[in-house]
Image 1 (cartoon, helix red, strand yellow):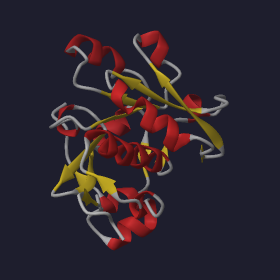
Image 2 (tube, helix red, strand yellow; image 1 turned 180 degrees about the vertical axis):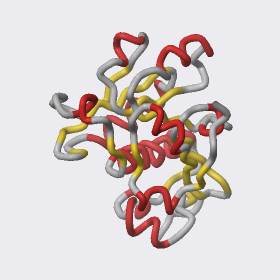
Image 3 (cartoon, rainbow, N blue to C red; image 1 turned 120 degrees about the horizontal axis):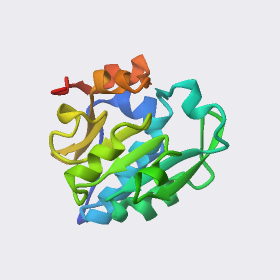
Image 4 (tube, rainbow, N blue to C red; image 1 turned 180 degrees about the horizontal axis):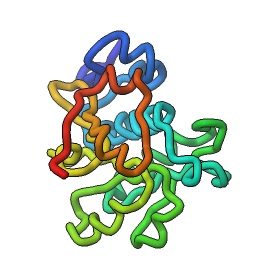
Length: 184
C-alpha cells in the first residue's frame, strides 16, 4: 500500500515495466525532487543494459563508468542505485566530471542544465551515451532524454545521435521509447 501523499512514477506500459524496470517501479515515490532523482537514476542504470558501445570504448575498461557533469543532485541517487550492480559483466562506477579529460573514461555521461553551452559541446565528441532530463535534449543532439509526464517516467531516444558515436540501442529499447531526430 502506498502511503498517502506519495505518488508512483510509472512507465507508459506494463510491458515496459516488466522488461526494464521491474525493481524500480515497485517502489512508491514521494513527489519530492530527490525521490524523482532516485527513479531517474534507476532508469539510467537500466538503460545502460540495453546499449551497445563501440568495442574500443568499453572492452578494456574494468568498470562501466556513469559520469555526471552539471548534475550533482543525481550523484548520490546514482551511487545508491548502482551499488553492487553490473552492466555487461562490468561493475558500475559513478564519477563526477568537470573537464573533458575527466570524461574520457565515461560510458554514460549525464549532463545537467548548469553546464555552459561551450562546456557541453566539449563533452559531445566523446563515445559516451549522453543522457539528460533537459527539455529538447534528444532533439538537439543528445542521445537520451528522460521525461516525466503526468507522473510517468519515460524517455526519448535519438538513434542518429547515438550512431554518430558508434553507440547502438537495443531494438527492445527502441520499441519502448519515443524516437526523435536530432537537428544535426
